[in-house]
Image 1 (spheres, helix red, strand yellow):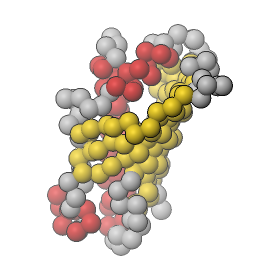
Image 2 (image 1 turned 30 degrees about the vertical axis):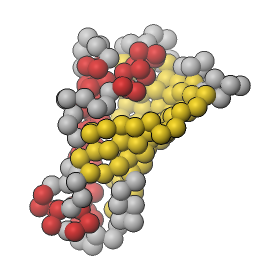
Image 3 (image 1 turned 60 degrees about the vertical axis):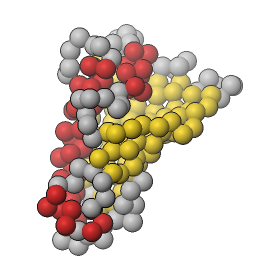
Image 4 (image 1 turned 135 degrees about the vertical axis):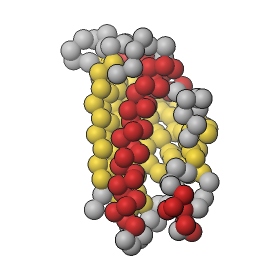
Length: 173
């Protein structure tokens, strides 16, 4: 089956400021679920100026205790891998993320783009599409997908607010 979550937001702030906020938003005291974010690779393509980054986020396992009775869900932390391609000349950044934990049972992928807004070059448009699909958990598949979609939607909204606060923007959407 699978669940898809989509987010579209326009920040009334310049691209450089929004991207800088995104890149430094975790960890922070407002979201205790993200324990650490480690950059494992960073390089710049000299010919294009594109900056590539690969980061690993270590997050607390947020699966409800009732569902952690299943042995595979009992782990304390999960890992997410994020790859990004920042193109300062075109004022755009593409991001792809996926879960490294439970890959034999679940697939979680997100694709995001920050880009200069067509409406106003001093604004930044953000588009994110995430998909989660759970297999191999029998009757729990649907329950876990429903939980995951709710968590992803709440997380996307919280991420928007954290970007604002970390970036010292004046308001949260």
